[in-house]
Length: 250
Ligand code: IPE
Ligand code: IPE
Ligand code: MG
Image (cartoon, rainbow, N blue to C red):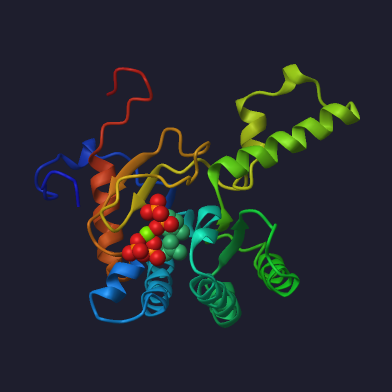
């Protein structure tokens, strides 16, 4: 992890900030994980779903209110069709097989992303999962699927444009709070912490609006190797960060 080494002995407990309310993760590195084992990329994606299960459990155990995970970006359509198919099959399987357990565990599932290009049966499946779990309060799990941060803003702008044409919105009523309410991820507060695994140091079009002031953490682990301990470490490092929001800090 690209954090200075520190142990809980270094900082006075009183100076630790509160844990994040919303952690967002760019789950990257499945392909490299598989390649290192001489296996096809789909094998890495399957291991990635196992790591996702662990991360959801860990987030719940650690008392996070919101967890967002980047599962398929709008740019991922540039991959070979066979890989796209395997990613779609995995989402289908995750939602189908894990729904009962997630519901039992009090997880509210939300899907953030465009519906364009998704098949009717997949849309029905995810709509059903969202509906079934809508009243759960323990953890909100936002699955960013067919998601792009720019596309999210375009969709919000189109909607506001339609409202202006319909006469229900005046241009001066558009402000930051309104845009935050119009985006796909509106049901969760802005993420406090965005983690990317695999060592790549970029956002790849993730949460461009809501992540404006998130703490960013780039971890060298590949996503299938991410564990509860990885999440705990990231949260611990977050709690030692100095967040200033343009001011002079504490
Ligand atoms: C992340 O792993 C999963 C998705 C992007 C869907 P990758 O498939 O990007 O794995 P690498 O980055 O090629 O190792
Ligand atoms: C970002 O990873 C998208 C997801 C994790 C779903 P990518 O592997 O697609 O991003 P790039 O291509 O390295 O930017
Ligand atoms: Mg990648």
